[in-house]
Image 1 (tube, helix red, strand yellow):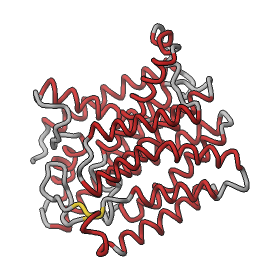
Image 2 (cartoon, helix red, strand yellow; image 1 turned 30 degrees about the vertical axis):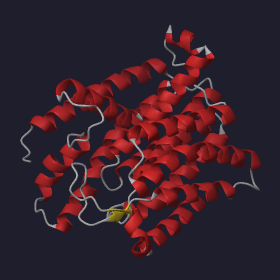
Image 3 (cartoon, helix red, strand yellow; image 1 turned 180 degrees about the vertical axis):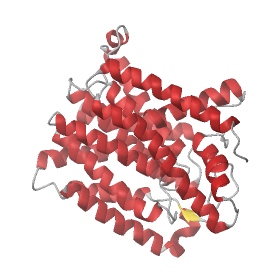
Length: 357
């Protein structure tokens, strides 16, 4: 708990300083685009919350350095591996000149770095035939880099409302920490706790008022941390089913897959073209907006904050059974199928329901 507490306090203070001295850096760090299809804030807001998360995580690991140097060393290596993903996102936040493909490439590079320095390679999915292919090194490397980059991008995709991506990441990281404790993997457990603490420190200022955003740097950072710790937990502990971390992150993963399917096969558009038809956006427009009403700035912020708990609950519907059945691949696969069915049903009901635009 030391790592979590220190990471929380440092992230809390650093993020406060960023918010307090916004007037000194807003011309570079603030999100001034208030009219985009995925914009739901009323005034320019700094989008560099990832800085507080990164510094908080680093200090959380430093706090463990003298008590458990091996555990702290593991955490430092995870942070080093995260640098390309975080840096690419942060540069995009500051310049708006880093394409999605370059950010994905940077995140894949982070995954490769994690594999090299920590042995974080996926070598099994507990699926006959596929596991045979993954026994070959190049296939394992490609699958790992694709999976980590995909999950990191998924968190960036759901980062649309105050507290949404951050709290979903915290819920997932606590699930990872619990199972890591069950198998005696203190390195993964402590790093997951420190990551959760750093994110919670940021969330104090992000939710509900939205004084600062994660930005791409923060979203890619927390997505990478979730994905990399998931890979490492499975790679280091054969008793953990690879479907456990998959189900843990099933909400952001399935949101991404469903979005690509929806845009390509239903909307006949490019899969990377932004739109306002994500599940969280439908909940904002057709559920929360219907309940709150009024389009004034204060009500807009209130609706923004009220949207996230619906998706926290959605994520929990996958996380809770994942934690309960973390070693049972068949049960995890069945629950993943049920979750996908439930998600589609919810999306369809809200999209075609009686809530007004």
